Image 1 (cartoon, rainbow, N blue to C red):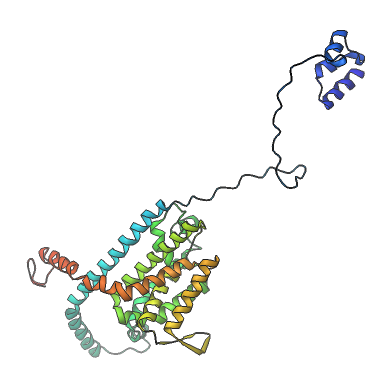
Image 2 (image 1 turned 90 degrees about the vertical axis):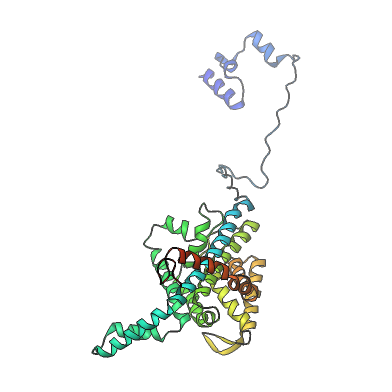
Length: 362
């Protein structure tokens, strides 16, 4: 019992268990002399550096804190592909819009005669009461050209909103949210502008788009308007990428606000004296120029103060794109489309696309 006690005591006091395990606690002469009853000279051992204690209070039995995951590096080289995608997609949008306008003008005469024939047949056909299709056609014909144009955009936004609870979440997060830190960078720059997370967000954006559509389409035409809208959507996403990469504040973004800001800025710049009002406060009116200044100032303040409720970088990018296009881009891009349209005309003529067959005139 004394041996076990001695052994246990030595273990607790840090002694050598072999030297302590002597019956009766008595040491042999040799061991007693070497164990310190006589001071013997020994080589000093080098001191081991004590481990550095963390600053601040340390709690007993505290679990080790796992190291924080490092933030993604601010590698601007990751923005090369999004930049090329923005330039390429915008150029392709205006190219397709120019071809679309050419084909529309080309078939306008044929459509005119078809409409005359349809009206003549409609008069001969007996009228039906309560015809739902006729009511829908009358409603559709009562819309302006701009409202007809944005109707397809609104339908696309509603379909994407309905897809959120139906499509697997990883797919929606990968392709319908824009984030420069994501593995998928280019395609979400466009698809995320058709995605909304709440009914109020969707309704507010679509209402603003519907309100400014008639003015914008009357200024630009249907084809040019769609090219501007889609290009502004991608440009606003790239502005968001650029700001997030510069500040290191990564995160997903959704919504058509950037593209709609381009439409709003375009109309307000072209018609600065137009009177606007807030839907819930119709008694307060203000000019379009003042509205644009207030919106740009608010987004600039949100950018500098670090507000994160809205993607202020995307808003500013869309607004700057709209202002630039109505002041310079229209002259630089759209009015110089003639060589491209002529090239398309020559290709159509050589391939036999004209009314006269191969080699026929258009």
